[in-house]
Image (cartoon, rainbow, N blue to C red; front, side, top):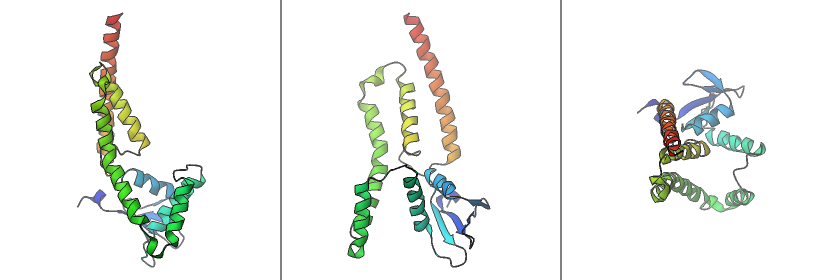
Length: 183
C-alpha cells in the first residue's frame, strides 16, 4: 500500500501539541485541515492512552472555520444534526450524510463532463482555454476535487497544473493570432 493511502498519523502529546509522525514536526489544526483539503486522510491519537481523537479534532476544525465566518453549514442543517444526537441510536443522519457526500463526489466529475459535452460553444475557437479556466476555477472552489478522486498526489497535480497553464497560454496565443487576422 502506498504511503499516501494510509491515514497520516498525528500524535497528541500531553502538552496538547500535535505531532506529524511522517515529517517529524509539530502541526496546527490549520495544517491538518490543509492535509485533508489535499485529499489526505488523518488519524489523530493520544500518545499516552492511544485513544483515537480524530473525530474530536475534525469537529474542532469545523467549529473554528464556522466561528471565523466561513459558514458552510446552514443553521437548519446544524439544528438537524443536534436533533439527530437526541434520537436513540443517532437516527439515520450518519448514513444519510455519508451517502450524500459519496453521491456528491461521484456526480461532481460527471456534472463537469456533462456541462462541457452539452455546450454548443465547444466548437468555438479558444473554447479549450475557457474550459481549462472553468475546470481550474471549479477545482479551486471544491478543494481540488473535479476528477472524481479526492486523493490525488500533490506532485502529479502540480505537474498537471503547470502543463495546463502552458496549454492555456498556447491556446490563448493562437486565439489572439486568429483575432488579429480577423481585423
